[in-house]
Length: 281
Image 1: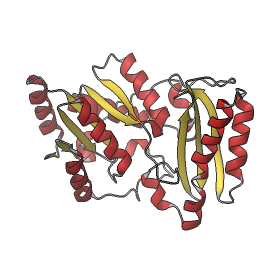
Image 2 (image 1 turned 60 degrees about the horizontal axis):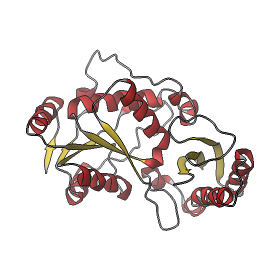
Image 3 (image 1 turned 120 degrees about the vertical axis):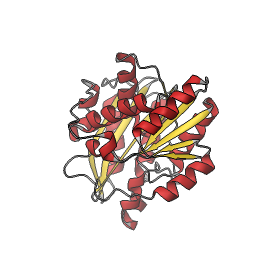
């Protein structure tokens, strides 16, 4: 497995891969890898000849009061995990290489990036889209795999790729969960023991919503009310939002149907967790 640290070296390697006809799969990450990331790497490996994984903690997607400074870093550990998962190349650039002096370009996806998480994290999705667009240009992948846990992010990147005619296919990998249902996330490590014990209520509430829908309930307000009640029964939980939207357009819906995505963001203490579930498969 190769480890590439500079943009110019990665661009040269990408040109070589594309010139020999290899199908290149790409998984962008910020490191601190867990099984959720590794499942995306393995999925990319099944669909491509060579998998490139980037490890870059992108400063432009963090707000002023968010956890950039304490975001965990362990490149040696991550590289070992990626080698076992079948990655061919790890691209781990420095921030000064991605954002050199004078850098002034931002990619903004209107509307989709301004709701849900975007309403509470202004500029977050601009940072995500800007760095992913740049990484796509550097790595030149045929396909890129993102996790469904970040369902809004995936929808926004799909819109960006379509609007800008980018020659890359976006694929969503399923959310990977702990045995008790909690979606894997690097931020789970910030939870206290009491908060961690309560956090599985997120998926339990979404599964309850699914059961209501499967039983014939289609009123979004009623189902979302039931989700909220379950979560708010936990003393450490503080709901930021709970919504029902179309899984692709992110438009709000009042009547549940196949393709509706139930999305939520909830604080347990100071730790913000997100989760979602798409009805109808």
